[in-house]
Length: 421
Image (cartoon, rainbow, N blue to C red; front, top):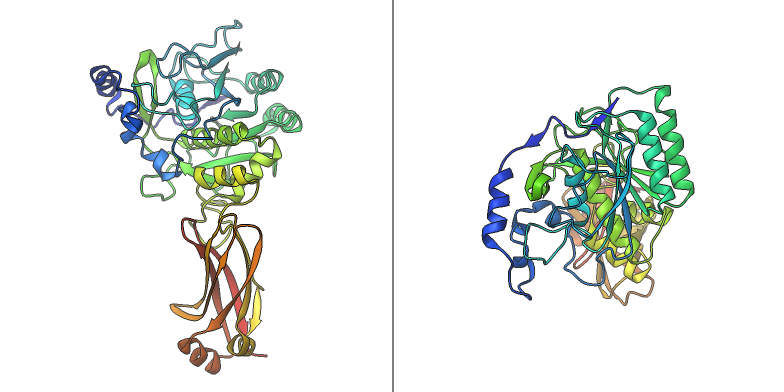
């Protein structure tokens, strides 16, 4: 039995009031920018993922399948952008949404922007393929979920969002896993929710290296107390108190890894609109995530926080953005650093000054910088500071960190072992 990942975490805050507010504010004059979406200021999650301003990336041409409870295609922020897929519950071609969950997911991904009502979706020019697999009570069968994924593939979906929880694991999930494998082989990106039971594993079937499992962060960008994590986790995204479209033209706040998965599917749609598909989508979303935990991939945050700006910038330039690529030897002789400095390769996708700091604890033992032009890797020598010379001279072994940064981009940190030899 499956059910929506946030069925027990619904927030009724402003559910009716927000809808009334949208009606009272009415259409806003063209050119008003963000003000033309009166609820945009309440969508903290879009700011947390650094959603770029409207421009070249809007998801045009992308088809995102929402395998869920259906979608309300008459919602004013979704009208004209929903493609009807199968209703595998009632067996007809009308996958309307009796619960609101699928509509909420669809709005996060692709609600209209700049139309004078409600909020905005991440990829407002993308289309949503509505595939209903959940009944009005929020439950469904693994057979229907597998069939829904197959239907999404048959319809040509670029991204397939599966925001569900599984009450238990076992052989009964093999049909879903097989459908996911077929989807990945067909070039679709699978995005699944990690689950809301705070378990140390992703609760949905996960294909290693073929599907993204997404955990949820709260408003302080900490792992949400309900979010599962650990084994199988790919990255994290905002999932607490997320505002989106709801039934009967209203707006609603929900919390859950379902919302975090939808955020990821929305950014994936932006990249599809820029020509990125299949395995490239997965790689780009993971490689551009912001490292917010311990150095490198870790059990609580995976590769880090979904970052739309970095992902889009990388797709536009057909390479990893800013200072996402930085190399230094994992170990170095402290005497060599003292005499010649530490050589670091800084590969930036746009011009700027690349800075390198080598730290041991709170002490900067070496520092360097160089101007890069965005065309490739530049060698930078981090030369010892006076404090660094003293520290390196009296200690035979120490662990440190190499930090590489460029203005406007997140820093890259790599561990470094300094040894006397």
